[in-house]
Image (tube, rainbow, N blue to C red; front, side, top):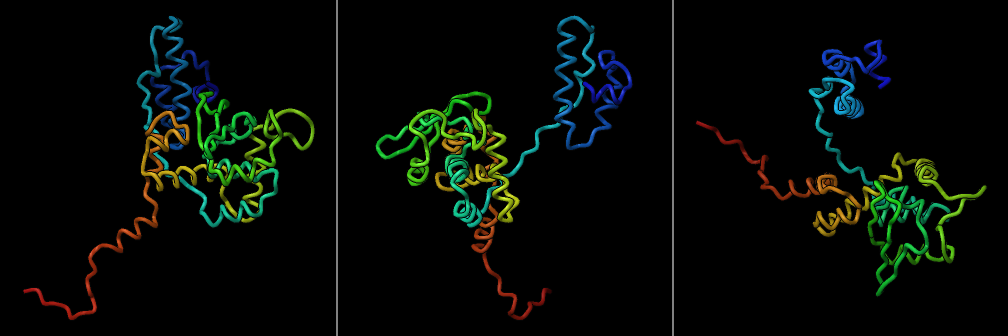
Length: 252
């Protein structure tokens, strides 16, 4: 609510509908949705509790969420990143790029979360975004690479200095530093985008990819249906070809 107070110059509890509309109009387009989503619940709550007779934020416009596009790391970049990664972060890059896992899911993995059955490798994820348990899968060749690096049981990763668990922030930081050190602007999340894009390309099954990535809504997974530019280029090459080198035809 500090955003509102700084604009109206008095206690936001007493803000009027007009003041809130003026405040919202003053915001950059890029933050309107985010800031409005923080303010509206406050006024809805104090109105519901009877502290205010009205809800001055009720009619504030809530812009629709922006529909992004996936920004996957290119395959040749991923290959170089993996080949040049030190053993400390190689498993993290593989888990992001081939199991579609987030930094939080990687950081809190335990050895017992990996389940190898009939040659397939599944991962039971407990600490996830929103704390919703889910199961994802991992290519066997990736598992064969990282399995010798893991302890016999317990947390998969230990701090290099000090004690305690590895944090999601550390996972992101070290992986991003590695990617940037070899000249790439990609981040760890670019590898997750790679996994989602490649999975949808391989299966053309939105529901399956939704489970793979742990999205609660298929609308989130739908960003991966954005067609790759290369596929668009291949498509237009299949369109009819007109020979423009032949003499022009006079139109009566």
